[in-house]
Length: 323
Image 1 (cartoon, rainbow, N blue to C red):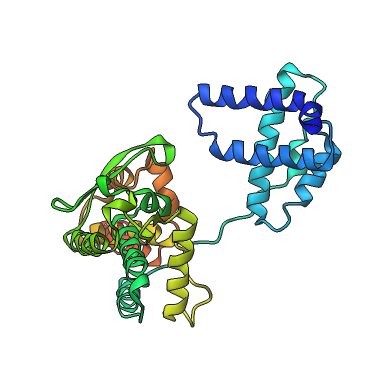
Image 2 (image 1 turned 120 degrees about the vertical axis):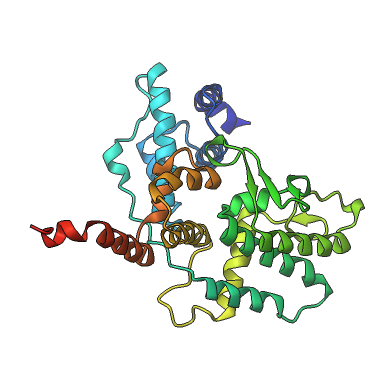
């Protein structure tokens, strides 16, 4: 109670900030989580308010986190302090340049179709007891959905049984990133995988469990986004498929592989790739093709196909024509 009274000005500013963000239609879950952690740190250390010293001490507590995560969290606090400064001119506001800069994220590791086939074969033939049948089947379906439909890890984890139509093979993705919802039709093979998983789920999850999540780690519990990513990455590591590689692909690299595969199909079919890109952007749930372009970096196979098409169309110009 004593700490609560000491931090009443901080609490009032925090509540006003969150109300303002929600009124603007912003997603505030992560901001609120970070700022509540900061508030707990201030209360634990006996601070009366946020200042340069307490802010520095809090940042030192985050050294176990990745560099970009530390910076993202510090930027959330900076955004809160900047909002607070408008009504409290003497409140603390860290200098932006002192927070640092993002480090480049590693480029996606290419995932080939043959590697996915081997991974699915390994996932299907692992020895397991009855308790592991459901999570093993869920991990297999997660790989299929991320690779063949380009779904985000969180989108796969949040799917509920009522979001899937096994007859038509269509998924409903609700309020995902950028607050976008969309319908995602699956390929024929992915739809068969979905129906096979639903049969296993029906046998393992009784109606009394009241578990509506599609992918389940237990009969009464669905996967969280973090747990699903960890389990799929463990599956990839134990399969030994990437044992000789520099690093195992990230789970998010399945989404990149989906985008690359789509471009390769269009080039090989002779399609106008530029006119097809908006379709890929819509299918992947992006605001525009600017977001989609992030997934189209470092694609040796696609670059080779694009170069061949350019050579066929413009070889005369490069050779000087028939002059």
